[in-house]
Image (cartoon, rainbow, N blue to C red; front, side, top):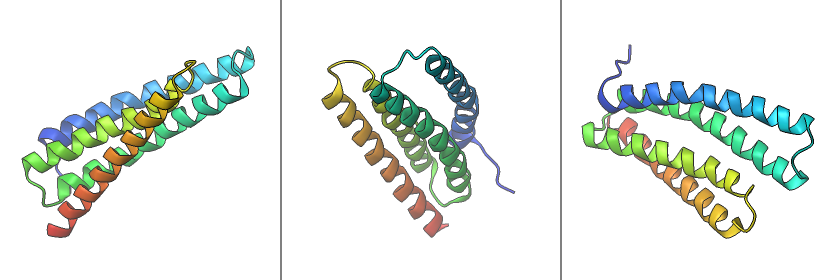
Length: 132
């Protein structure tokens, strides 16, 4: 049995508490779609941001289990947890930034930065699992 403590316990709680916000985002999207308040492009970015947020939170919950069971020390666990948190916020948040006019370059940069941070979290987690 995997015992969560320290950063893995804290960030598991953060991920679980964040999931209802993604659920509310789905509810909000349905309301906007019914009222036809979004352009086709806005709808696509809203859906992409919403889907990425949900999927990445589930990925984080799985990754946190691996981090807790792996061979990373406390500092390594904190690093992975922070990379996951900021990476998820950046990747999905960057897609939501596309909803704002004139923000495409910034939105693209934020989304790509999130992907890089998430990749770093996955590689660090893999190292922790390999040395366990």
